[in-house]
Image (tube, rainbow over all chains, first blue to last red; front, side, top):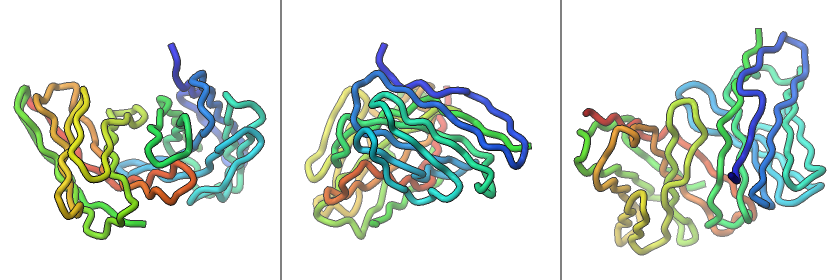
Length: 114
Length: 112
């Protein structure tokens, strides 16, 4: 079945360590996104990519990095510069980046910094 | 960005209709109204969207006020699986990317 796969589902990290979250889609979508969700809050956009080898900062990009070397993959690295990395991270994709394009979300990765 | 206002929570009984309101008094002529819902510990799921006319799909109906300053998501017969957080979101047609600005949404509780 087509969809978005995020891994790992749960991740624990010590302070000062970088960690990379995986996001893979087999929907042949051009656009991909990373969102962060804190408890009881809505989603905030970290990074987005409209096409391979191109990506843009969202509202809260500081302390994060991404790459888009393949159409189906958009990994997110949470660096040690991110001051409060404990959160629920959601990856999404859409066929186009247009305003009516439905976003499909993965099941999320929950990161806890110890 | 234009903002939306939703009630923090609503309750319904199973098999009854649910009307989830959303106010967006500063909506611009190029804003589309989107609804997503999020079940516990899952990613959001698209529900429906519209611009000016009322819209129906297999999941729900969207009723848009004539002045577009408010809208209502209608679940015709609520089931226990409809218990989720419902987000009303405005997407600007002028935006070149799929930025969705999520507020806190409405927590819908469905009683058996």
